[in-house]
Length: 105
Image (cartoon, rainbow, N blue to C red; front, side):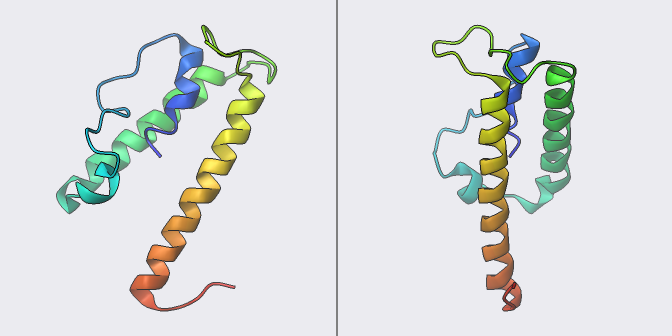
């Protein structure tokens, strides 16, 4: 989700830091895991969320992402992000079910 949050970062006009969507493998988020990096990964996610919030604070939902090949409104970005979070939360729930064996209702 650290990388996905970068959809909002375009509104602050600053380039993304190295580490956002730079994985060489499309499955790196699943294959290149290191439990020792968990706190660093969480810190990177929280920093990305903080940057996203600052980037869109006070902006209109109709404001377009600058500069865009295809005009993209902030409203569309929020909708996309709701879908992304729902999808990833579902993935996390499937992983939890595989670990503890309980099914959610």
